[in-house]
Image (cartoon, rainbow over all chains, first blue to last red; front, side, top):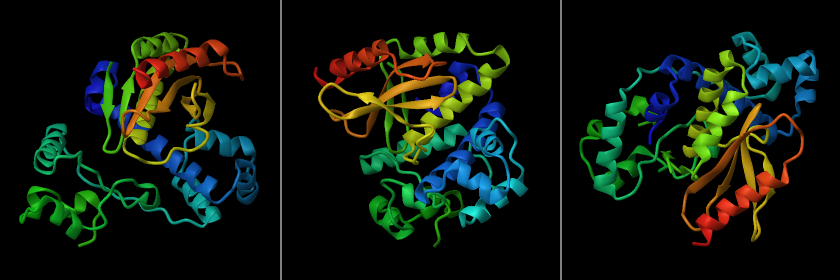
Length: 152
Length: 123
């Protein structure tokens, strides 16, 4: 079952889901980065000259995070923030893409995100590798490079 | 059982797990229910797509019968108890959800996870 099916079943609108998922993914990425750098919430609060409750509330999603705060967190963790915008693909297109992949390749289609590069599992290394797996000459019938942030 | 098919992992709900989610949700303030549903779903999606979850959202909670441990997918005050299957590759099972406003794991929850684990992993 896809997220879209769950949304219908749970009675959640896409607008609410998109908002909560964005907050969740940003805060989770920060928390994971903090863990990998061994920085606690108290440490971060000290670095930002804020209270620990400010950091806790911001990272739990209960306090709105401004871009200024995001930038400050990133600066103190010594990480870059990459934000990209892309057109939303219709669910039917995503599903069709997945089914075509599975019929041709015989295994589940991986998805591609370089934003979480070091944490991503099961991802081919490059477009060339994808092409060799799919043996498809027309890249656009499979992927838009923009969709998956893959450098040509 | 209902499942979520991520790009890396399948997340499968054990029998009764979805019902336990709605039970837990009843105790959440009405105006927070929709966001909480969306937050839990986004964590499940993140796990299914192979992205790392933080220790805050995916802590280790207790021991499984034959070694290993189970975790919680946590969005306060609701959490889902989950284990990664050794029998079925790339699959996580959600045993059940609870509304948790107390610090320690209750033995009955641990028992429920272990019973579901036996049902799935030993049959």
